[in-house]
Image (spheres, rainbow, N blue to C red):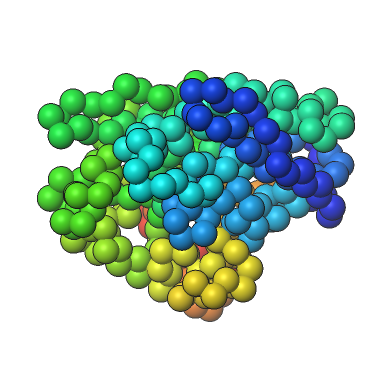
Length: 324
């Protein structure tokens, strides 16, 4: 297994037929130009109304691919822009989940867009990741479900092919925790985490005071507290919703720009995925360098043994982590 490749290859758009979606699903594929047994990350972008798409989050994608991961980014319908009267708006959260499932179902076709890549990829080492709306989308594939107005849970979209998740700014519980605006406009934002059992890392901003919740930054730690599989939480001090600028290089919309925070997130997510997927190239959790740290990492007691390649080690918390 080879990693730390310096060059990458990117292909976009790759079009996947999806008749029930109303429009083909476009995908952006980025992969190391060399290396074998490459693991895969399927990444779900944030809400497209704010400019997120299959072409954003390069600060993460560039790092992951340089570290030996194949990254696949679907373009959700909100990135293309939906008219207010489009009936798909009401079920966009479900379509997004199906987008991720469709990418995994068509993984061979996506990888084939780069000659020789299918033979260099280990599709059994598969992770999902996402930011904000994308974290909610990705969380469904590792077991999260939506609580309806009647209290009933949505059908499970959990996918046994997914071995790990990285959930960045994952929204918390609904009901009275939501602001009136969120309750009116985002009724699906009411997750149940009880069946989220796939090993997952949650990353939250210590200053992410969202207008969607009345609870402040603590809302974004609910997944860690409530989901059995969210074994670890990294809280990035001072980070707002863009977590220091993970969405784009030199993005003018980023109000909390912090290269150190982005580097911490890149290193932590890479180390976690390597640990869980059985790629022991870097220890998890990250050890802190001397001096001020920019994040605090917690791990649940009694996590499963490192001997399981799809498990994360049981680690005492809290553990201090820095960008190093």
